[in-house]
View 1 (cartoon, rainbow, N blue to C red):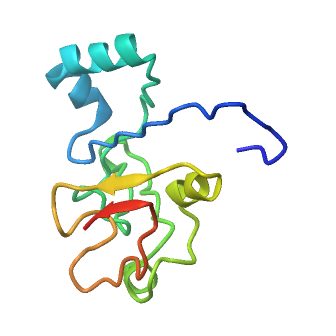
View 2: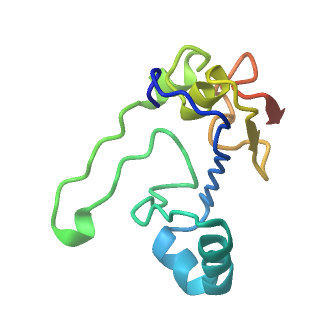
Length: 132
């Protein structure tokens, strides 16, 4: 987001992540839902955002073995990802909040992407409305 850009009215931004299913599977399983969101809300589908491991576990490597390729290591290992609070780490929703947006993060499981068992997660809410 450009700091020099001034809008009279900020555009609405919604980021939906269905992390329990790969994008290609969601296109097969939820075609009407995806079509409605794209058509009615002029949504952009990030077509190559895919489930890597056990839901959104931050420490899972990308397994490319079935393609005869080496795995891609995750940016964080479990010690790093779970060994400290994530408040000082970059996070896109915090950037929107700094720009004056009202932000919401809600997950359908208490042990979601940032709250795995034995992990610290966020100490302070990283968004305006935090459903944890």
